[in-house]
Length: 257
Image (cartoon, rainbow, N blue to C red; front, side, top):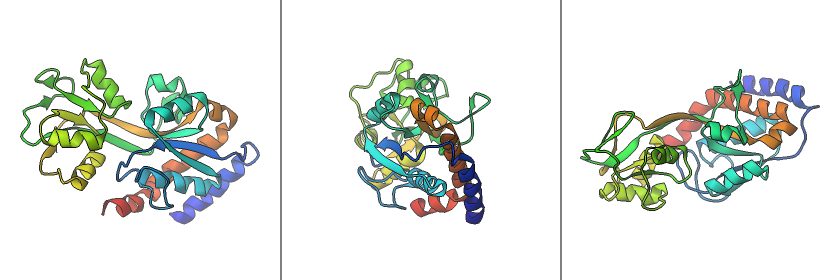
């Protein structure tokens, strides 16, 4: 499979060599420890940055294009992408609002399967909780349920009329869920389970059976960089899909076993 990827990358490189610039791609991602997808809170060591980081690093290597990673708060990454101060950011869920200021991989105008990861976001609740979610509404109504500030899951909760008491990141929220002080917290499933394990909370937290949200994560590019290098960006997305499908299982195994 690696030989196939290398051969394919050679064809892609030849196709874009005359059209793209040699400027590095500046990629912003969150300065939070979110295992197994991104690790640590600052710089990364090659091959030890987490599943999503490794997908992008491998793709850049196959593309033979320089990449600079920058770690910043999530909302800062979004602002800088809008202004063209960074070229791309991950991991980003597509919304119509974001489509206005970011470029996503599309086929016939619809976001396609060149994504990083298909994410499931359940509601993490205290063990023995009586809270339920039927896919449309909570029972009892308007419980104290929160999510990561700035995430699509939080915006969905806000649209349902639920207001956070204070902004809570996952490591702050999960202990409150475990003790029942927070009725629920929406978080990507594998991330939530791994953080709960690392924090010794796995026996005190469970998830509701119906997901709150299911969406693919993308590497979104700035409109500015896409306009400058459309062939480069499209090729990067295509290689990402190939890396996820061919090298993904071995990368995932490295971080989850």
